[in-house]
Image (cartoon, rainbow, N blue to C red; front, side, top):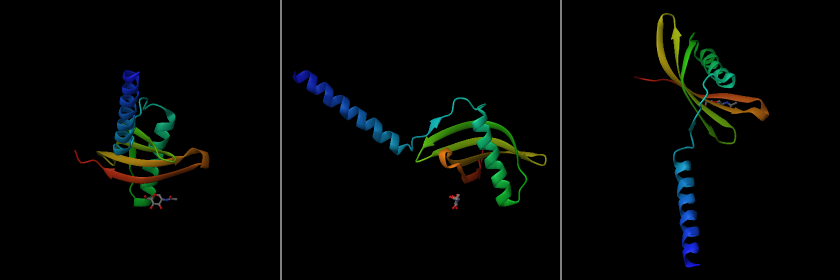
Length: 114
Ligand SMILES: *[C@@H]1O[C@H](CO)[C@@H](O)[C@H](O)[C@H]1NC(C)=O
């Protein structure tokens, strides 16, 4: 009986430690399928929206990495290359989407310095 109580207590402690870590790390998890049309749609939106705001004319080249986080909506953190004229650079964009409200916003767009 004592042993069982100990086990239960230990697993509770472990579960709360995991939950806490999750929050501290911001809860980003990798997107496995970068070819998902939903993900490329978000990337295209990020580049188009960035161009609209900045007056630049970047073209999405290739998605390199994607992560998502659930935060009263879904945050997408995407890394990709984009070209402007003949030069190619790496960028990271964060897009918040609330699909049930048809809401999307580009919250961050930065050049990644290699
Ligand atoms: C979209 O994100 C930008 C940058 O974080 C913010 O300034 C702006 O208020 C947001 N727009 C909406 C509609 O939430």
